[in-house]
Amino acid sequence: MIGLVDQERVDEALYDDFESAKAREKRLAKEARFRETQAKNAALGKKVKDAPAARGKGRGEASFFRVTCKDNGRGMPHEDIPNMLGRVLSGTKYGLRQTRGKFGLGAKMALIWSKMSTGLPIEIKSSMKEQNYISFCRLDIDIHKNAPHVHVHEKRENKDHWHGAEIQVIIEGNWTTHRSRILHYMRQMAVITPYAQFLFRFLSDAPEKNLMIKFTRRTDVMPPVPLLTKHHPSAVDLLLLKRLIADTTKQNLLQFLQHEFVNIRKAHADRLIGEMGSGFSAETTVKSLTSQQLVRIQQLFREVKFDDPSGNCLSPAGEYNLRLGIIKELHPDLVATHASSPQVFEGHPFIVEAGVSIGGKDVKQGLNIFRFANRIPLLFEQGADVITRTALKRINWSSYKINQQQDKIGVFVSIVSTKIPFKGTGKEYIGDDITEIASAVKSALKQCCLQLKSKIVKRLQARERQDRKRNLNKYIPDVARAIMETLGEIADESPPKRPRYDKEDEELLEKVNSEEVTEMTFRDCLTQHVEQVDYEMALEYAMQSGVSEGPREAIYLNSLEGSYKSVDFQSPTFVFRFIP
Image (cartoon, rainbow, N blue to C red; front, top):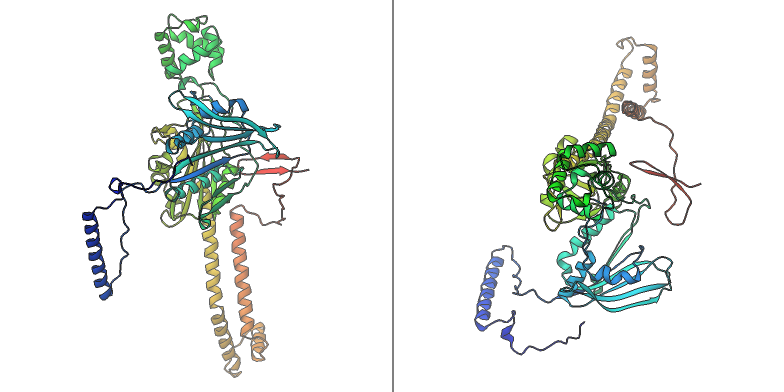
């Protein structure tokens, strides 16, 4: 790839896989003992074990992969590509807007990994809407100077009017070891973003190892765009307060409190300034505040009670989308979803969306936990996460008619917030020490379980009715035969010994005697009676449950292809689209 040629070994003893004469003698003796033991076991009829595989000392032969990621998004401006992907930029995600991702360094980390493992640059293609050219850039990064090293940066013809971005990187890796994690990550992405289509392809030198998986789009209902929001006073620390003062355009303290924070109006700001003590006034210049005064303001923010921030700035996936994603990827027998109302921890709003499914495709027995933070899957450190601990220790599954050990249970929890309280430097799990989040996760899962319990109880009752009906039908032939034999004996009795019967009974005995009424007649009557009783019991249960038996009308939905003028009517659990 980079101009190297295979070299023949000159000194074999330098390499890890070199085997000395002593090591070879030891290995052969061990293999001989193993073959002897195998022969004895075979003679005694015992199970013969496979020979142990030879263990190498090194990492083995390196595998290199060309990884290409392409989308049909908005693309990147031509001039900004080198700085966007070849320079590590400083910034903050602290409390201003809900953002996807964790560090904002995804493409740069791929570039640095490529530089470490192969030394090769990455290639970028990008085009924006209504742009008649494709930007092509080949670059790597100068880590010491934190600057892009551009090899090629040019404009190419855009014949297909494509827009979006494509990044190609060559890295060293191990597909065999990490295959399951990659596919698991893609599946989780398909669950939380059913409005997007993913196509994953793995191409190998060996055609039998090729793989292609398509995660289809199920809806075109997008989550709302997250909105910019101001900082909540109770979430402000000293460093942030200093940065806000440095960046503000307001002159005095009163204007600064009103315009840089949420939930502080003029009257409230006046009261806060009065509480700060001597040295503070509404006309105090914020740029002239001393470090001690800043500490006083921050301390007051921590102690004073403010109204909770609104959750309107957040962008959850939506209960409708979460349900569609679960159904699309897992095909469960039962599914329930719930979205909490906006709640607050340390001045930051958050929303918890949860789903619980029973059964499904490629789902193991027991709890299968899917965790999402700001609509991004979390793969690692699952045991310490608040979602895992809540599902394992704080939910009594048996009280909801769910068998935690035998049922195939899918647990889906998505948390969105302007600040996700990750633990650890890798940002792979959410800590269990924040009471508000732990309580919200538990409440959302319980709501899902309550929905499932009612469905499971209905299924159990329907199964009991079916079992009862099956048992009754099983005894119908015997009962009909016994009735027929009894009536036949009565009909054959001589008139003096026969007791007096009603007119209807006499007519029945005559019909039995003339074979107008047979055993099959009683079977048919008993079968009809069982059917009638079963229907009446089902109807009575439906009336008690508030379900009315009414006419049903088939509804036909159009496919997503094509363009339509439509109006959407949204609710937490479905979207009704009216196409005139």
